[in-house]
Image 1 (cartoon, one colour):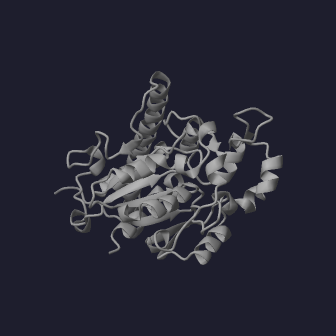
Image 2: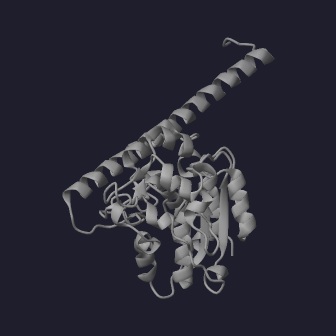
Length: 346
């Protein structure tokens, strides 16, 4: 007869605990490996785009995401063999245009792009003028129309019967508002991600006054202003110091994403954020707006975000707990789930 081994309940629990720990350890290592791959891919993309911008002086694509060779299919390792949800298979409006905020570029959406593509959506990330790998000098961008031109051009060149969902982060919200006013027929929904969802006659900068001070004080005293046309001329842009950026934007973001941002962010053109928007009830007012609040945000505090939705109530409000001003870094899964939920709203 074979040997019999008797195990007490404690032994059984310990053995089960050990098995679970091993499984959790393998799962954790797999997640870390996937995250490491994404980070390397993003850094490679940022470096490649920087090199391209140094080598070429002609125009180049400002869009990344589903236009790349990494479209989702069943053989794609990122898809894990998953089929797109049924509601997405039948959903006509499955294209999301991602609009970055001040200083950022299309590169900042790399996690969001991967997650949305895996779910079967079609994300398009755009570099605004003077941002990302766009070759324009930020000092020459003086109006919101100039700043938003890549977004407006993209919308105007869509097929006549096609609509998209816009997602605007931070001051990119002003570009989304501008687009709602000028191309309302091309936008099915507008999502403001801890963004400057301003009212008619308001400036994007006004939203940040609590953190940065009044416009007059900022223009007179700020050490972050850039005088691209000479010290005796009005300022043309601004750029926070690295420590300031880390404190304002990235207080909950992973270290690797902060490192990516530090080598990729560009100066912010001053003109567009100081411009008062003209928004009409007939165009902007008829758009379907949604707002996503970030509850550990130091750049746009939760109180300021609450005031924005009170002053101009959107259709629905969503909240991301534990997120700083950059949920595409700090809470990518939570952001992804909310975007999917909004996309499926009839």
